[in-house]
Length: 391
Image (cartoon, rainbow, N blue to C red; front, side, top):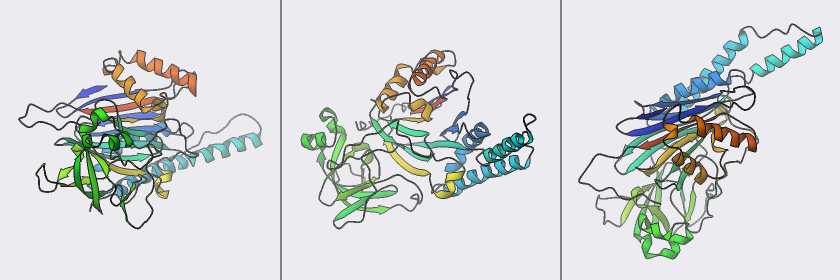
């Protein structure tokens, strides 16, 4: 499905595994146009009624963002609802084995009861989007290995919910600024990155695109009143006196004057720290235990964060069956753009999705592969010129 509105163009694809001899069909995708909310859920294959859990979670997703602040109460409600469904099913009739010895029937009955203890499990990634001037503001809730990706208009990975090697939990330290999710930093703009190509290159920025970045000196950081109180996204530890590179679209003048030296910037994974390790994202790194709804909500294994992106950024929500078909985020981006027209309708997408399933089957085994791809439509003609996005 591809839909168009005045604000967003959306491609949503749900493609069950079909090379395993039977259709899994555990994924669910959803785009709510009135709420500008996307969701992708992957029902756990080993969990009875996993597909029903994914259906319920995807439908509930817009409610996660109804309040401006922390969605903890909403995600808890969703978890409670799934537990209620589980308990209702447990009290209903279970399959009664009618073959084998009495002892074998008892074992099968016990196995069915044990399976019901982990019924109605699903992963979830959901995002609420809003265009604000030259920015695309995104709020993300993630549980498990279904993932959020944000790309610039030319395919650079700006942000993801997957773990990477560059962001670390900042410890307390003298003479350092801890800058993390939910915080606003006050910085002094030292100049465009074009004035220091060596610093831009050290931060991993293409020198040809350095004009889209500002060299800034962090002065202080404070938490917003509506900052999330639960989540796993990590932040930076910045030494005082050391500059960072900030995309132009992210830097707001304190007094509204573009030439003003002091700006407020929200925390974003797009910010580059020249002395931090370069970030690498693996699409194949698996946790020992995948977090799932509803069970891991009660132990805090879910993530909520905000991201400020350039207006022309592309947001992709995907199950692990989709993104694990690719070696890198860049390959994922290239595949989407190469198949843009084919993915626009049910008939056209059959070929690229079939090829993707064959690729999965040759790697680690076929799987459901589903995603929602959202990009803001071009703004109407305006006398004001948009600032170029960071690259």
